[in-house]
Amino acid sequence: MKRIRLKATTSVLLMLCLMYMITYIDRVNISTAAGQFKSELGLSSTQIGVIFSAFAYPYVVFQFIGGWVSDRFGAKRTLICCALIWAVATALTGLAGGFVTLVAARLLLGLGEGATFPAATTAMATWFAKDKRGMAQGITHSCARLGNAIAPILVYSIIRVFDWRFSFYVLGVLSLGWVVLWYLLYRDVPASHPNITEAELSAIPAPRERIVDPKGTTARLFWRMLPVSVVYFCYCWILWLMLDWMPLYFMHSFHLNIKKAVAFTTAVFVAGVVGDLLGGLLTDSLLRRTNNPVWSRSYLVGACMALTGLSLLPVLFLHDPMISLVFLAAAMFFNEMGVGPMWAVPMDIASSERSGAASGIMASFGNTSAIICPMVAGFLLDRTGNWNMTFLLSIGIMICGVVMVFAMRPNKAFVVSRPASWNHDISFVQPTAAKANLGQSE
Image 1 (cartoon, rainbow, N blue to C red):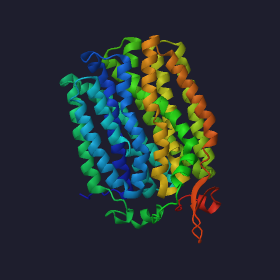
Image 2: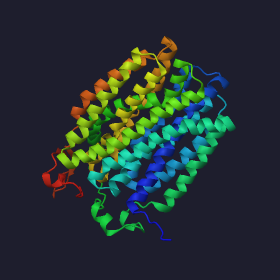
Image 3: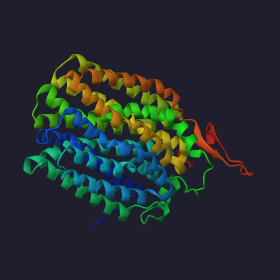
Image 4: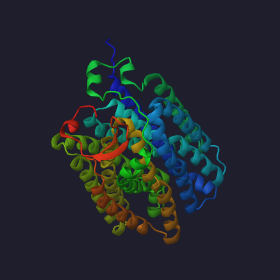
């Protein structure tokens, strides 16, 4: 029987997909387990919100640091270190005995997972051509949402047989398994991969020698990425509202048992899987057709955010579990449809040599919503007893996102200019038609 041999680019994409799935299982498993340990440990909704958001403090900081590290030391070493930390943190969550220890475990998890997506973006910028990056981001993020969808069912199944603590031990071991796979199969330099072909090498960006940037480059890159980061904050607000609170929303709003709440939550996340896939494919298709990143990235993200906000409106006025399920799933679908183009923007702007830093800036700023959103939602729930104010606020944030997409300018590349005199200058330039040609190295 003939042995099936995967392309090197395919194997890299599959490993990244598995990582995205595991990291999101590890970060949202707590929302399913919360229904059990909330009563066992005597925690309030506000305390649950603090536990949820504790993950985000180190996560936000290390998104940026991790992007910088992965650009300089490579995605392989960066992700090995990250995965070892998040695996240990996941297992330690099962040993928590109260509010303080749960917060500590979540802080460690955020430390481990902070650099993962920027480092993965460095890997994608190294391994995929420009007109394939939206697709790669869409597929990997769809696997993240698949992890969201799997997590409630997986954690609930383990809880039924054992308890909520054992579910974290199992997931910690799963994370360690991924470390071994990544160590054995990934290469920072595509040409050194044993299964790489000439056809694959000719289609991906040529490796570039890393040159020390002039002083102030990072600060200027931050300001260039700021409008993109604000838009990403708006996307992340909806994402973290769904990830952290959906099981408890269905349990408390409609008095569903944990089994039904898990089924409803899974359905919402499955809609996100489809949205990620469609958005990633659509943004690259639009880029190939129009050769215009403003249309294929910015306007697509804006349309998705507008539809997300509109999908939340019926949830405010029609208090029915099935109606809420349908429209929350629609909101998740449209919100996730924008993530492929969003993560392609840092690669469009900053090229492969700074894509980790650019995406780290975007993700670090955007994921401050992971700190704010869970606590605000928990506070509003304790004060009002319902979700109306939370959803109204979320609609307002979507409106802000729609406005800000016009400032992203993915067609304006960030370039470090180095004249022969070495009078270092940094400027923003309109990519030439030749540079914009698809499939060419940047």
